[in-house]
Image 1 (cartoon, rainbow, N blue to C red):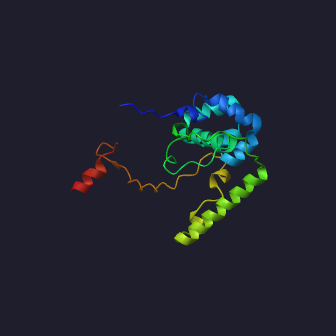
Image 2: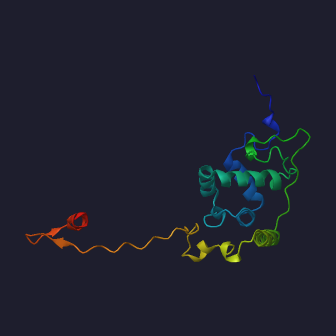
Image 3: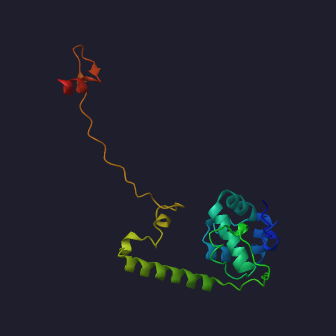
Length: 184
């Protein structure tokens, strides 16, 4: 049984990550990439080599960049609902669709998009009954000494008070004396 799926129409077919990233950066630059994708490697250490290294290790980021390449840089129409769950490299582009000119993107548009997302999240929280304080739109990890990830919600429990050590008949401390006293 053979599947005759034609991946040749997908612009990502046969395209390596470095070539794809070089094309995008040459056209848009790292600042636009960071503004639209929110991937820190485009802001903190903006180089092709470091970005490729990060994207090879991080599946979610690579898929985000591949989606950007398909739908912003190659300006393909939005994906059909049956293909939405697939990673961009596995999507089948219909035969009639051909890549177009890259979209014109600006930092102002990216900022407006972020504000819209924040407003939608706020509306969603209000409708679902969540309080504003439970949502971290202000990115607390940026305030916490420059950490790149959010703090864990786990907080350590206070240590139990240590029992006082007990001396045995010879005057030495007996580490098992407290447990022996409990058995009595």
